[in-house]
Amino acid sequence: MIELRRSNTAQGLFRNQITFLIIIIVVLSIIVALVNDRFLSVQNITNLFKQISVTGISSIAMALVLISGGFDLSVGSLISLVACIIATLINKGIPESSAILIGIIAGALCGTLNGFVIAKSRCAPVIITLGTMGVFKGFALLIAGGNIINFKVPVSILTKTEVLGFPTIVFIYLFVVVFVFLFLKLTVFGKRIYAIGGNEEAAYLAGINIAVSKTLIYTVAGLIVSLAAVALLMRLGSASAVMGDAYTLNAVASAVIGGIAISGGKGSVGGCFLGILLLGIISNAMNILGVTAFLQQVILGLIVVIAAVVSQLGNRDRSV
Image (cartoon, rainbow, N blue to C red; front, side):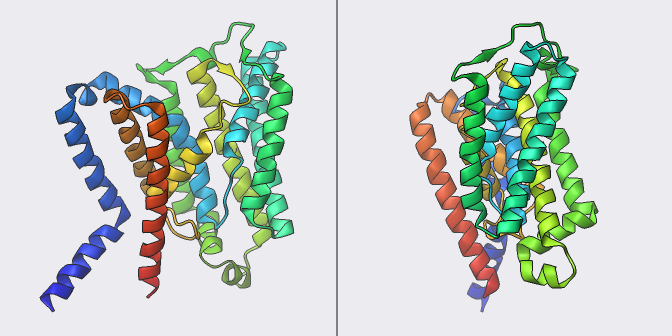
């Protein structure tokens, strides 16, 4: 009996994703700091948050879609497309703020396209977004002409890298985290997202317009991904059709590690934030320790597989 209680306590701690992630982050940080004292320096911590900002923003968009029971493989291509649109417009003489606004609107409309087709066709989101991934990538290639788009005119917003001494893209990231957290927690539509992801048929019977809701979910996701494109432009200072390629995998990895259920209906922005932070710490530690970029990709892929398996087993246990 005592052994059973101990087992249940251990399982409860493990299933509490946020607690588990906090413990892992703290332990890992202590270990890395003991190996290399530069890890806990103010400069390195600032660089850490700067490095995870673009991934963080795109991960929040992915989390929103996953919670609703969907999926989006077009995130990376959409980042590239929006960035190429903004850079091209600025080079053509469009005011910087207007170019950024047009790019964000274009990204939101691309999200609307994803949501509308998925909702109306009832096809698997993976298949639809696999197709739009190619479409967005193709348009980005057409706009960029296969080249890197450098700014031909002076820019201010996209080169202003700091606000109050901190990187601007970090503020954009934190704004997105807080906005989506409040959006899911305090709005009726936020609760509908969980309902649709948990049981779409029950949500429909409860009076929720599934088609409209899915379209809006992907629209918001597209808007958030557009902010990731703006942040990446700030970081790189140029645009290309391949600049966003790595962010789809990173977004899925961060969301899954943060406890977002692939099956939908479960997860939180807080868990996603911790998942992003954990991946950032792992990547930062590997950079400090001199691990090659190729090996880092292998490790990231393994982490995604392990996290997905653990998440699925946890959901299966809870359903028993």
